[in-house]
Image 1 (cartoon, helix red, strand yellow):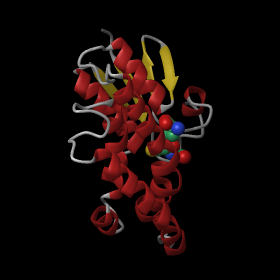
Image 2 (cartoon, rainbow, N blue to C red; image 1 turned 90 degrees about the vertical axis):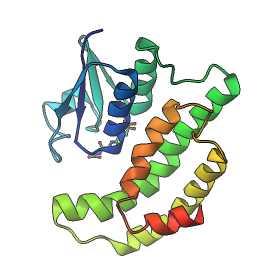
Image 3 (spheres, rainbow, N blue to C red; image 1 turned 120 degrees about the horizontal axis):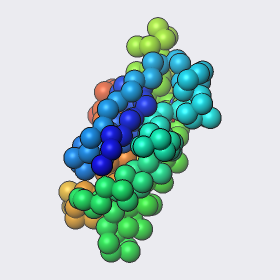
Image 4 (cartoon, rainbow, N blue to C red; image 1 turned 180 degrees about the vertical axis):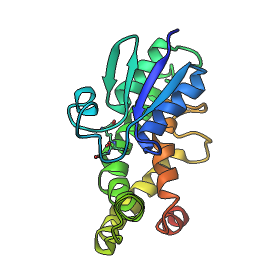
Length: 188
Ligand SMILES: N[C@@H](CCC(=O)N[C@@H](CS)C(=O)NCC(=O)O)C(=O)O
């Protein structure tokens, strides 16, 4: 199997989901770093018309959108399977991946993570405490629901690792670097 190239800003949670999936598959890959702040200009904007990361390249085939990338990797690298065969577990996996994109990232990760980590470290800006406080009710709702879905299991959607865990875990790890993590994790 030929090499996968992952274009990503190092540390990006979505980029890390792709890298973690490649690791689980034991694939041959390399990270092509995209410098923060250059993702909306050439050459990256030609890889991703919305200027986001990650993007993968595989034998000249370019693909963006993390869920699409993770599912592509699970199809071209079938072992170990990271999508459950059981339809209900697969449905739970898909649901959890959409929770990640629509509720965990949008309005939680991209607000708290941006104002606590990206803005101060990369842009020299003070955290916007009002924006962070405003994101907390949604953050609590998301953490409560992820805790409910996890229940007593080790993994979110099935008894074994799935793409849902690989998508969600880097987002949680990102938030774990912020002071908001403790109250969120405690309540959930
Ligand atoms: N829906 C996209 C979201 C990707 C995304 O928002 N990535 C963030 C980094 S984790 C990004 O590119 N941020 C840079 C920016 O918005 O300028 C996916 O699933 O790949």
